[in-house]
Image (tube, rainbow, N blue to C red; front, side, top):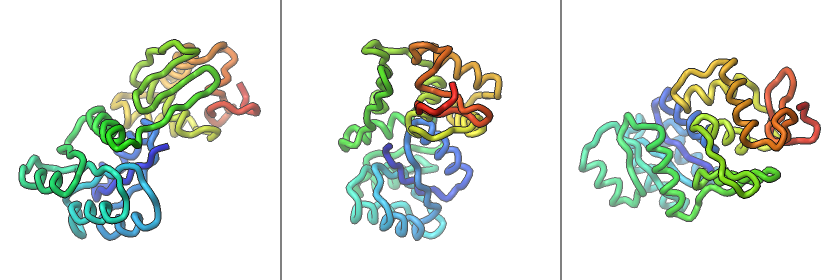
Length: 228
């Protein structure tokens, strides 16, 4: 799983971004300011950084410099304004890209994927039985044949692929799908989407082996002891 380093002082934006990125199969570590970002850069390695230019205790430009000094990863600036001088400054510092708030979620994901591809840190390929999920290209194949999933079905599959063997509660799925998809997903709708996804990826949808039900809790990707 590719790790995104998010530096953003607005906690509501950070929460929504975290849910969106997790639903797309990324791990997310969040820092709310320059000082916290510096500490986290010393403690862990990341694959890409999303950095807000305006921070309460400093500047995203300083954070970019700190990243450049410690880790060779692409940086995408998040900015609330289209101020040309700020954009030029960021790009001249070596930032890979920038995106102006408010931004469209799919555009941000596309920018992240492009930056990771360019850096050589593209997301990998997951194989579950005859199912292949290429999270870099968004390609899903079953027994060599490409599957066509809806955006929400694909996000749902990515949640499982990025959490192999982990029991995922229905409440967690509902929360992540709501924020990532930008549409209302209730408990009944989730059941429908699980059923639709199983019909596409399972050999025997009535006896699922990929997305397995853990009764009374939620679901899990594979696992011989999961209840069907």
